[in-house]
Length: 213
Ligand code: GRF
Image 1 (cartoon, rainbow, N blue to C red):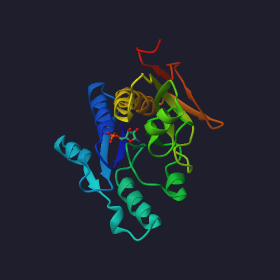
Image 2 (image 1 turned 180 degrees about the vertical axis):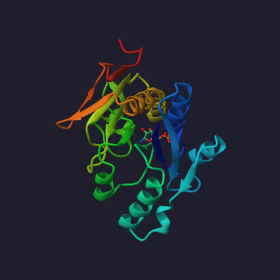
Image 3 (image 1 turned 45 degrees about the vertical axis):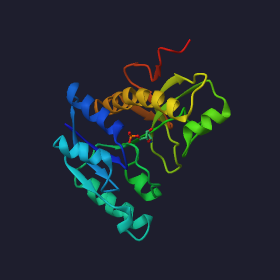
Image 4 (image 1 turned 180 degrees about the horizontal axis):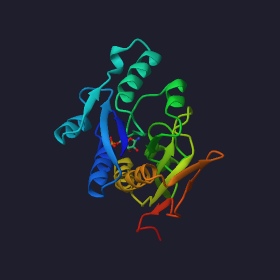
């Protein structure tokens, strides 16, 4: 059994999709802990109600990034993670933290990276006039929203889309993409070579929304 630890800061819908898929599909893994940097994170309450182990490492209780990341890593490592998932975790991580979890930490970002890293992704995409948007799961490296890409999901940008409409369409795709990628990891179906990810049994690393023409 592999241990999965999930970090979040807010709503936690991606965390929910991973927890539900892990249970429904009987992955060779367990959700060892869900950890938030805010005690009021909505996702934390849901996880606790599911009987999952939860913890809070409040960034406001630490003097600087290094101190916070050290406390966070100490909490995470109590749960002996094989896989660490960032699921809407809104903190910039120190290089030392990222190195500690190198090769076993994934993130999901709501754009087709390397386009539109950082915040206000959907606003950036609409402003640029792209016709396709999507989500990316990638291994985490020190540079924000970079790192070897594990899988991407593509959705159309439709006439009349605003940020909310686009975000909702992308989020629905995220909820399929993140569990798929996490499952590959815990089943040993990913390899990382020369900074690129290979899916070992040939499953497509690209999900297309059915609405794309
Ligand atoms: C998602 O769009 C995710 O891609 C981004 O933050 C958002 C988190 O949403 N990193 P949720 O908390 O998983 O609902």
